[in-house]
Length: 240
Image: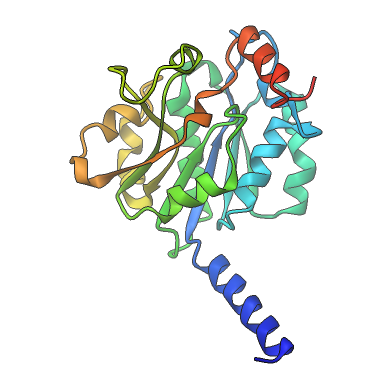
């Protein structure tokens, strides 16, 4: 195979990979960080705010549209993400005026926004947060490659890992974000999203064979408290 033919083959493969990503992304980033005491969306990882870092991860999966839901009372978050949104037309910023009512409203806003830009080719929705500081593209790719109705992340909680407990211990795993879900089903569930319930209670009602799981204990390390923030900085996961 000639060099030019090999190059064309690689380009064709990359193009096909991008075109095969028939999904949209919702980034739930409207938390008010009350337990943390500072705006977690603006914590810095690898020289950039978490809100920007996570949006770049989403962009790397080549979705049709990315909806970033942020609190309308934190204007600095909006200005921080505005530059990236201007560079990538797929990124849509949504202001949540009811951020204090729970995650469900943020998710509803995200679903509504995707529907407004809806393409008939969208068949999966990738839903992610903003504070799982060790999240990476391979994990998101694994979620999207799953064939089940819902493919969720599975990990231990922070306390279990701190105590060096293993998966063999009688401690319940967390089944949660990020996750990929059938888009049509998510739209059907929208009317049932209220308060802090989110999707978890709805997912639990699905037959077990419709739920896939991708294990990744690194996702246990989210940032909710000053102690968790200090630990993440000591580990070098976040900039000081």
